[in-house]
Length: 175
Image (cartoon, rainbow, N blue to C red; front, side, top):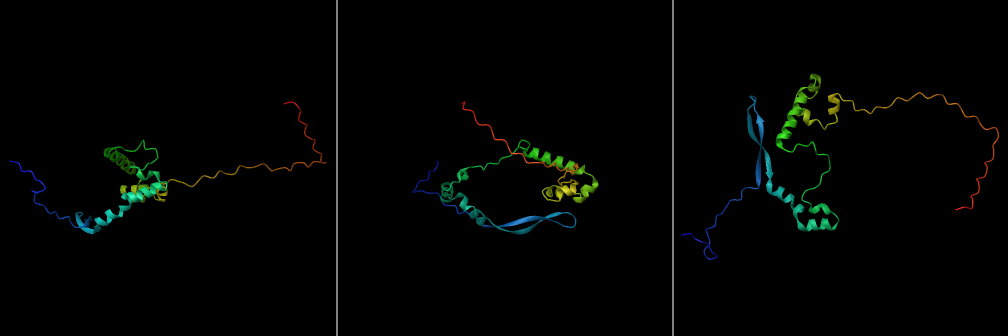
């Protein structure tokens, strides 16, 4: 027969270990044979990270920001404006874009690829650097138009005698 627990007949409590708030971080390291091994790269305090977001969810802070005129404080998603029509919508589409970019990189002349160490990842990582256009051989200096030759200016003849200006006609009385 099924047993139903009540306030007088409670089930035995199960104690669960919450774990350690300090998490060990690991990263890859390659040996001389190219074999990857995981090595400890540091420690991360998960509790401190969670507490660092406390103000972003504190209702008193949110209401104070709203009272000060920040109407977007309660927006679930912050708006972004731009033309995202060509943005990949799936992971497969994003992967296809990266494959096309790698094919483009492999089609570049050898001297251009050498400027990026023949490494596609270095090519992509340096796209926002100021030297990328120079390494690609793109001239970004603004073109200054050559000054057009101007004919020599001749001074206008000076009037021989100043003439008085004629008075303006009087307005007519018609409306």
